[in-house]
Length: 279
Image (cartoon, rainbow, N blue to C red; front, side):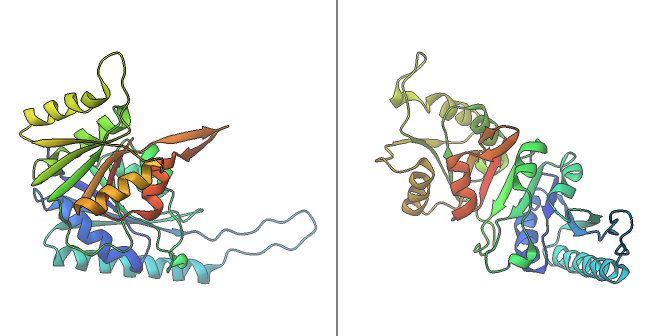
């Protein structure tokens, strides 16, 4: 099923054009609808201990935040018009001001979420909670590098496959893109033998399944050479000139805190191409 509803998470003017163009590239597959979400921090009154003077609610900051949010909304609507897609702006005020957190409810009713990797040159835009997007929405997330140049290309796609449920979810979430790609590669780094298949056949079942969808995919078993899996995947992207990576999003728990696994963390910090992740 082609994407019909795309949620675009907007940090600020710095990433708006890039995220909208990527979202329009996804929605444009079949005349979809783009929902832009953005959150501004809501200034709160400071309530001190008894006997101390409090700090009142700062209406000036609140007005400035709302003005910025309205201006972003206008820029979003113009960008959607320029991309010939229908757009809808949803601005929020919240204690955290995290645009990803406030996109969760919208994402529940969407086919896919689009967001940009953090840009170290624009720290004023703030971080967004990528864990929330990937682990709490139940939706695939297309992450765009902050260095990415439009348009969104899907000619050569690499699937990072390890036979786990997260990778399986990502592959089938990516079917609309895989069907339109000219080349699809199923990449396995250091595949392992188990009771069901040899290491050489670890990607055979998913390749056959994709073929039933009309997708001819090449299976590539690649040794890591002792480097981390994330780096091995990046090397393969460079070698092949791939336009997009499809992979599962993995986490490691530390007490009650969810942390990204190694390969996921590598992709999010140093991604070279758009990456579709699913949980």
